[in-house]
Image 1 (cartoon, helix red, strand yellow):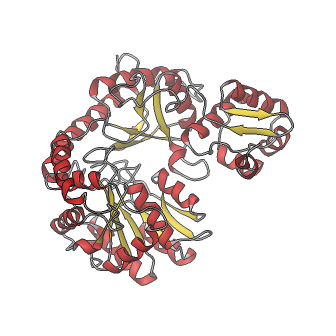
Image 2: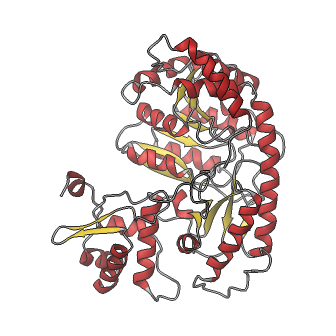
Image 3: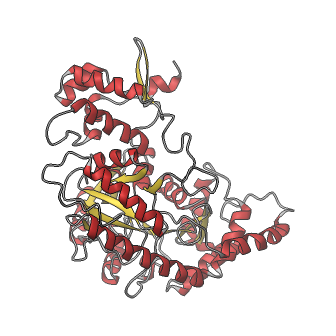
Length: 493
């Protein structure tokens, strides 16, 4: 037995909370439903690999089911390769051999198995046409850097200047010393958390929110404090800033993580007045704001809004704005950045030295070249995404009349109310039809959002139509509380 087997384990009560509402509505086939939910938790990353699961009797007591139910469930998971067991020692989670990413390549890979229809990742399937030209030019730019060691904690000046110019053009005067280049937005989030929060600290988050941010909070040992998004007329959701203010006053979080631009997953957009209130709240309570702007360039409808930092926080260390080259240019370009005060950037750089020594030079040079064409590139992306969003909305209305999808003004995905608490079961069923989904609970805490599903509109149209045909089949195979006549298989044929 290795060290991880001993140290990584989950108690029965914690496991029961993580499972959420897993029971089928008819109360039958409990073992199969439990196995499906545990498999989904493993594949989604909510239950880490090499985690020792509770003993059969302990879990049966925590779930108020028979030990036979849990034993049967564990047998199913062992047969599926999700659990491995050692007599007298216990059982541990593992990635099954047939899991996406285990043997199959990404559906976006030109050499991989394209039989999977990826509706789990809100990412564009192909790079901007400008990328090849930028990459070729960047190779020549690289010559000027080959005489140095290549380690740049702050990032290359050329990219920092390009990002600063973009912020300035969007209404926030910015100098290069206010920008820190990171290895993607996820790296930026983790770096900010490392600098500003410690184990046990509270971090305010929207609910639902970006799941990788929740994972980063947990990895830091901090505690996420959720503030619910309220309903909105367009189905996206909205911020209750009075509630958010009250939570900050009552809980005194170390910092807040917010996505004001086409919030992931709801697609909501915070208006200018709300942004001004956020900055004022940060000042009055001395609460740093990590503002995730990774989708800010992808507005599809209506007028644009200014960055949060434009409302009196251009030089404030309390507002840390995170951006990324991945959503507009290409997901494989792992370049992100943090914009804040020059003093905060220096503080982040000092912390970064213990995390990594800088981002890849060549990728930074490519991103710097692309930033010069960001207006042209983002305009083309917006046109493509607007058509894709409207197409998906139309097909969902035909195929699933009872579903209530949002109509976001930007971003990459819809937030869909399924009218039933079946998101996790639908996700498992869809996998059997080669459709990958991101279940609603992936975006929340303690099993919330079983009625919801995030659905990106980033697949090519013909593949999206095929994916919807398969999703109809998966939906029809579920045990529904009510009649299933809301599914029209002809509409997506």
